Image (cartoon, rainbow, N blue to C red):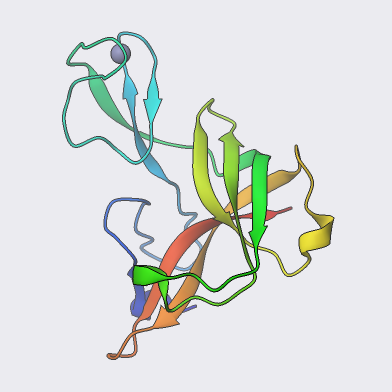
Length: 142
Ligand SMILES: [Zn+2]
């Protein structure tokens, strides 16, 4: 994937790389009163856990473990009609202590295991009509 043509599926999920060597991180919020973590970043400043206005922007670790996953054998419907099947979707426990729902990147679905170490990657979903690579975050076994 080339950075110049990379178009995030939505803004604000991850940091924008300035060069190809820069590591991308997911962007979230942390409550400085109770420590609650949120992904994606909340656009309101108040914490839904403790009701204090104390949220700060944070960047999450790129590493985590698979908490749960499903391999989906049916092509996605609706707004995700560009995708193919099979694909894998699950929950990742990020090192920072938050569980994030994510696609899981693999070609070897039988090798996936609960607790498996994974790392953040950005991958192309499809090419749009202008030749941009519409991309999203996923977690990939390491
Ligand atoms: Zn809080």
